[in-house]
Length: 325
Length: 126
Image (cartoon, rainbow over the protein chains, first blue to last red):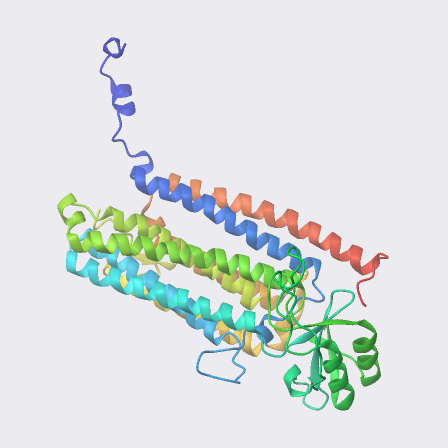
């Protein structure tokens, strides 16, 4: 049949090698992927927004949760470390554009150098992310979960500062052990027991008269602190169990959804950064081997670069909605 | 291809001599914006805590600054500035329409659920 079609422009259109919108096939497909991935992330962030507006008067305050910086023990430095992470990612985006630019000028040595810096930046970011997770999971003050599923935290009456469970909980002799599948029936087990039992916390609380309970409810810009009587009543009547750190079921910062979204959104983003680093390493070795020099075009660097910038772009939004707003 | 870059930002207010120089210029801009965000986030000026269109002014500022950053990352790092207008519109408007729709519908519903908890008979405060 093809012989019956005359050699017109139509034939050339469909025979391949065309560049619609003046972008090559690979670049266009990368843009397709980026748009769809952007929608996935916006789905996550919009769901985060949903949950947040649903609990708008009791959502944890990010400034009080993310206050840690490595090697700075016991200091409250809200957002400093996340700002550093943002800067590292933007910086590695810059080295990536510089690599693409050097590729346009066919300078192999420069592309190699800039790709190397980009990979290092990516690794620093992923490492920071892991540290951030570890700190978040470990927690620092501890809290009590109520029967209604709310989190109550403890503050000093004079300074209004948070007080850790380990600073006031007493020690009661107990024989309670973690139930593992190997001990009883095979289908029943439980997660790690908290360092303190609820009774120890209550006894310690009753023994220290300047402690107050802080609820999840936000009043203006801070959480509500109850009076001493209300605090005692809240803890004794409604206390259910002790929560230390964070997991998918509950966390000491507030509503469980907060930790769930933290793990899902930053985890999904961290996974993107990780795969970006892997792609960068592959391209890096191809650059060293001179593959693109021989091919006569560094477009592959550009395509992976697009992905890398996209990861940076997403982080800018995660940074805003998780840490700032 | 190599020299096809558009080298001006702010609608021609700042013109760069080379692509490399533009990249550093954009980095400086992004760094300034991030620093402003962090500083505002730490000091939280009182007048910005007022509510405006059912959100704090500070949060509006954060979101606008984020979109500014997103614009420069896409336009200069991802070279959207150098692509054809068609490609630019296809990518940007698709994303903007869908994201706006998604946000509107979810946040609208979340407000409804909050009101149900707040004014209804469901009690969570125990």
